[in-house]
Length: 280
Image (cartoon, rainbow, N blue to C red; front, side, top):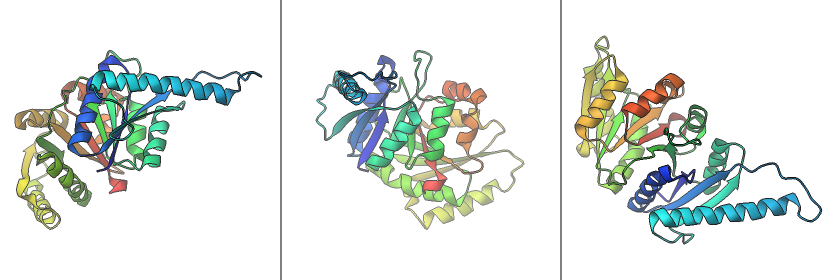
């Protein structure tokens, strides 16, 4: 992994997410690009100061503010190498993040999860879902009050599909770099009587692709997927939850539904990493 893009709203409440992104970039030996999307008021053209010149100075000023914000909360100098900052003008936060990610060829995008204290949170239905449907790389959604600590246990929720194997194959190098173990869980209703057989098939398929000696498997029967996922994550002490966004029936499509976002934010307090099936 070479480059991680973290989109910041520069609020005090999201400082913890910034620290988390910085620590993760250090652990993965990647450079961190901190991006701020500035919503600029319509610029009135004048003879003395053209619109382009005004915009340039505004961006420069906002970049300085972003640099000081990062240095204040990280205690390091923005050197333009290990950590970089950039401010862009765009009316759409998600479009700006996608454009910058493609320009940089980022390996991961990190956004903060909206909480009650922020008027401009990034984890909202339209932005989150819009990003997840189009991101060219994994998307990590971090609670604003998350503690920057080492990731030791990664929980991957599977539907026993071949796309899951591809996602786990990409996840394994990251887990090894972090010194973390992967725990795979499948939660299904008791009516899905083939669950155990599917688990064995999945294990065999996975062994052909990756070394699964550091991977654990759990099968849980329940009709309450979100509640059981929360309970299991807490039971095993998971530091990161990984999900696969599928083209037709993704778990993320369910949690981005407005009636379930609040429920997931209330129930799942650890970062969420999503892989898009289309980019595997």
